[in-house]
Amino acid sequence: MTNLDPYRISSEPFYQAVDNEIELFEAAHKSRMPVMLKGPTGCGKTRFVEYMAWRLGKPLITVSCHEDMTASDLVGRYLLDSHGTVWHDGPLTLAVRGGAICYLDEIVEARQDTTVVIHSLTDDRRILTLEKKNEVIKAHPDFHVVISYNPGYQSVLKDLKESTKQRFGAIAFGYPNSEAEAEIIKREAAVDRRTADTLVRIAERSRNLKGHGLEEGASTRMLINAGLLVAADIPIERACQVAMVVPITDDPDLRDALTGAIAACL
Image 1 (spheres, rainbow, N blue to C red):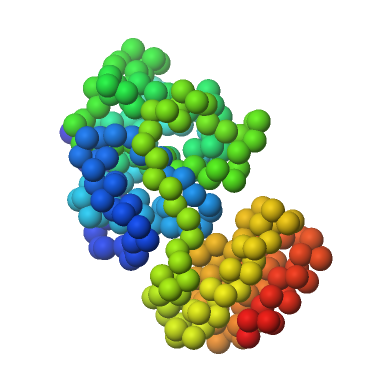
Image 2: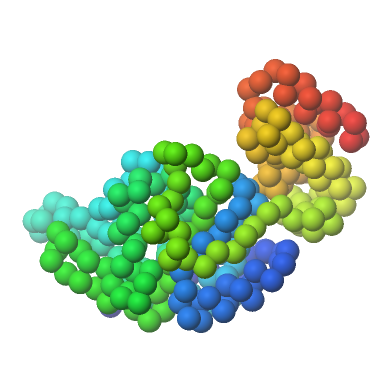
């Protein structure tokens, strides 16, 4: 019996709905439709999955995808220990056996020959084949696959295969409207509403530079980080430099433009 208690979320994560994403996810989960969350980095996709796992009372196993990840990293491998050669399930296999939500974070970062391992789990077969173990696992009825995908990372080398994309229902995410984003910053960073509103105005200006030198504007995550610094008595100008300007670009002209945007908002 697979024990997934360590993967259960015991307390409610803060998540502020922006549209009808909660209802859409609940409907998809009811039929175990694989779900793709599409949106820019730092807009709340991971927090949303955590909130939904808590809301649905399901364990959540998260895999942070990267280009060196192999299929064995997902499904498992034989390892040597004091008892000899023993099979150890990977995170995907744990979720399949125990009935967890398996969240593949930023799946576009993984190699395409790795992600195809989920294909048999995202159609009506709902099986996982462990070739090295000569075993076929029928997915637990509660098993659910969720992936996140940042369309801004699309390129010839980094994109999902069409055969992967078409297996998922997709929920589009973006940055919240200014009112909701300010409320999120106020709650998460424990700052006053005036500071939160100022950070949102700065972010909006940075997002206007997307496509004009910046790949992405300041994310909600960045604004929360800036708010945390302000709450620790760092002046807001310096907090924005540390949490937004310096991380987002190395271009001196863009840094000057962002610094000017910060000054104009204060």
